Image (cartoon, rainbow, N blue to C red; front, side, top):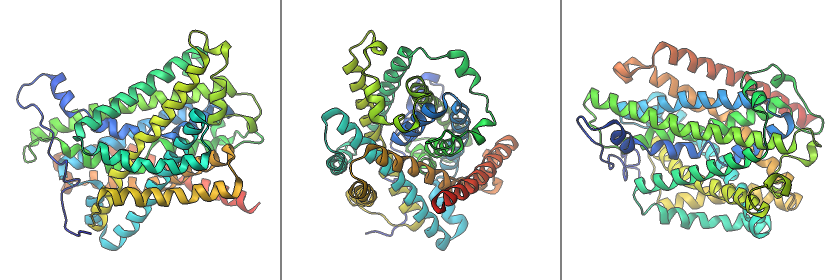
Length: 451
């Protein structure tokens, strides 16, 4: 175990060359593109899937506005992360520790690690369910099989970060194509979809008997969409490009292209999450809440010959399960990288990648195996656990947002790249609203547990 301070993810820091001078826009954008894909993966993991599907199944298109607002907040925060990393040469964990000191940094590190583990749990559950749907493997065995992710990551990491970025982008594009086609087959109500992007007060009050409230699922969507660990990841991996750190023009250019890359990729994740909610609404809305919105039920519904039409129903369902498995495997890369970033940044400790991977996976598996042992292999129980991991992420989010907003709004730290007034107002307003909503969530959850 080492305790030597290093650059953020030193093994990839400043390793990707970028064109200089008057190179074409497309050529420069291609060189800077990639970090956005790794970040976008976290916005379309199995946790996003289940919350979006259940939101659509229980409340139709009502929560589309929540996905839109969450995605816009995510874009704003990720731009701040990119600016922080490019301008200061520090990732969010390093910059936060310099701000708050060692003792508070340890608390923040533990909280962030728990958020990463919550994300890991969502990945494990999604992958185990996908294996069950594809090969009829029992959930418990599927959970154990996910330990193979350790070997997968270690194999991938031997390639350059550029190749990993390209692989992840291809998987994102695959998921996008699959769900675009499947939603098109359901013939959704386009005019109602467009109107649903306008927020409605019903989100705070709607409650279907036998299902979670719209507000509860909305918070899950926020937690699944705006991922705390992505803030640390993005501030680090943008530093993999070889821009001139001392040149203000080079920094401005790096920020501009990083912003385009991030917003393009997050637009894909926004559309995918909307497609998932629309798919859940098209197939399940208006049915018994106890019998809808789960992965297995969606898989079975996609085998409906009447809906499949132009493509074999079994193939359509299989594509869904493959996309679910790919989504879970995607997240294993970013989760481990982020865990390394926060450990090095907050407490100056570096572990070998394989040790970091095994520790995260073992801790994440324990509550899932415990749940299967206590309640059996009931898919609805395990998927409920997946939803609750997203609620925890929503609660943990302000802990990462507060220092990010403060740091990027500091002229002393950011110089001429400090946040503008609009960024500051919108950022603090979003944080304040999220904190208030989370307090209400905690109260409601406690009341449910005590009743």
